Amino acid sequence: QVQLVESGGGLVQAGGSLRLSCAASESIFSMASMGWYRQAPGKQRELVASITSDSSTNYADSVNGRFTISRDNTKNTLYLQMNKLKPEDTAVYYCNARKLLIGYWGQGTQVTVSS
Image 1 (cartoon, rainbow, N blue to C red):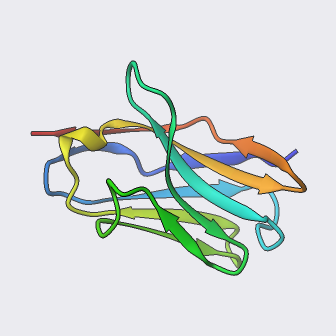
Image 2 (cartoon, helix red, strand yellow):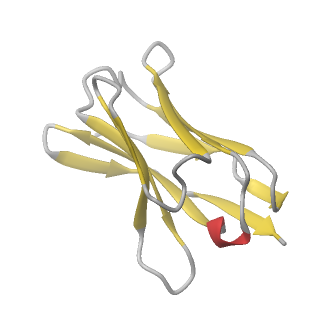
């Protein structure tokens, strides 16, 4: 059972930046992929960004060019650098890890962007 703990959320003004972290309870080196998802009130959870074991990345169109996903295998941590934040980025952000075809989720961290 992989445990994921997100941190780094908070309240920020539009145009500001935040960096989210996701600490895993075990080595992430062998994770097939990891990613960040978000869910705004009344909306479905959506993929924000993902990164594979060979560090190939994928971004939602809405965040491409503003957000950067990265992983530090030595610290077993996934990151999401979020720049030029917009009010529509407000959501609970969840970390996801996929190992041996099983997906694991963190508890989420709230990001609120004020206009």
